[in-house]
Amino acid sequence: MTSVKLSEIRDLLNATVQVGDDKLNTSVSACCAGDLMSDILRGATQGTVLVTGLNNIQVIRTAVIVGVAAVILVREKLPDETLVAHARKHGLPLLSTPCTMFSACGRLYEKGLRGVEKQVYRSGLRKGITGNP
Amino acid sequence: MPDLERRFTIRANDFVNAGEVSLEIQSILKHIGFNPALIRRISVCAYESEMNVVMHGGDGEALLKVSPNSVTLVFTDQGKGIKDIELAFKPGYSTANLKHREMGFGAGMGLPNIKESADSIEIHSEEGHGTTLNIGFELEGDFG
Ligand SMILES: Nc1ncnc2c1ncn2[C@@H]1O[C@H](COP(=O)(O)OP(=O)(O)O)[C@@H](O)[C@H]1O
Ligand SMILES: [Mg+2]
Image 1: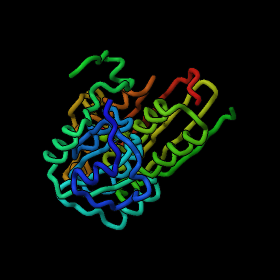
Image 2: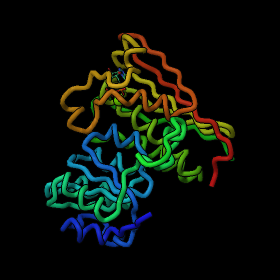
Image 3: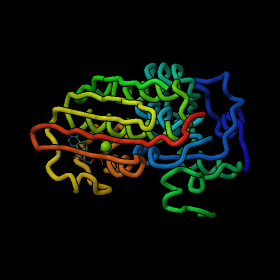
């Protein structure tokens, strides 16, 4: 499984680090993306980055609840003070990229990150999801 | 392990704090030392339930109960209640408004997700009298 450091992701996406300069050595191997927090709450998220166009405090709370390694805001969206404060409080790295959702995900996929379809999460196990989607 | 019982207040339409109760519950569970997969399941159920109380319910509370063999969450609100419970659990059914959708919610997947993630759920609701959602998780060597 490919593992990619947050510092590499920052460079790949020309991203600015809004929170978590000290955590750029963290490695991830998967990615989940979307603006619908309900969807993010249903999938696997272990060792993933969350790519989203939603610039809102619930993104930070969702990210902490499911335990993603970092959040990347697309389309050059900048988090406000509240978002930054919450991300900092929870030690959650928060990046902002000028890429669109499509381009950000494309670049991350090219780099070797994959979707979370295969990850072992209880609901997945129950449904018996195995193999390559 | 000692039994634990904690109550938290939740306010209707308080979108500034919506989710903070669940984050606190998550931090208590982490402190106890449950395994990450279990903590994730419980946290997701707590968060979906808390958002439902804030968005659709009314003023209410969350109760976290940890006993040797189980973890229980009870969300109670004095809101408008649910008219058709079967319909509410139907994937995709939602009465969420624009404000809820702007926050990334309102896909009608909350209750189905809770049902899927929990070991047991029990819901009591009466139109005009609020809702009680009881969510249970069994413990089977879930520490560490
Ligand atoms: N505590 C509650 N009080 C009143 N209605 C509720 C409550 N929880 C859920 N509902 C109703 O059930 C529907 C489905 O809930 P859910 O599956 O969580 O989806 P969503 O929150 O995205 O609408 C809600 O849209 C709402 O109409
Ligand atoms: Mg909901």
